Length: 270
Image (tube, rainbow, N blue to C red; front, side):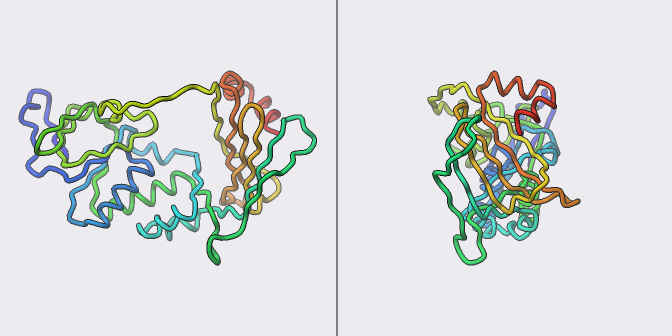
């Protein structure tokens, strides 16, 4: 699928069978796009290229909240049955607005229930479980995933797109899809402008173990420095109760917490 000739032969690095679609980015969005297109049109030649080193996705300790609409999409793509046993249903959401020192946190919004009988409104899914299921589905469908190399440039011509990779390889495709994240290199190369501004906030994401079960309950507290959320995770293999924490603080405070003493971090977390 990829022409990886040495530098002296770059001029001859043309593909005899160009791809129909090349997707840059092998996270949730890129893999979902690849599987969706291939499942809908099996005759399309599709490949995914990703800048992250091979296998690094398996060490991703984060988790993602998957709404019911997304889990239905994953079911249509043939991967939800593999993901579901490792997914934690969110059965209740509590939202408060207060200050850290307040003795009571008034609840101003709650929602719970099911979108359909037996179907929770959301699940928490470990990123590596989500990514792994999509990768295995992509492999079954015949989609190549090329890891450890980024797109460095692309040229558009009447016949399609020539994509240049950071290792000197070149690929040809009829369509190039950018799924390379919030700081998309392809977006910049395409000249797509964005407007952004800093809030002076940073997010800390971690997984914590706790004594009491969460019972599928998610909580989000809106604090002066930013939101603090606890999201329920599936218990560990040894039965340990776990939750994912998303903790937004002022950037300088977040940096101090992450780089500082572990005891101080745990004290402030509690």
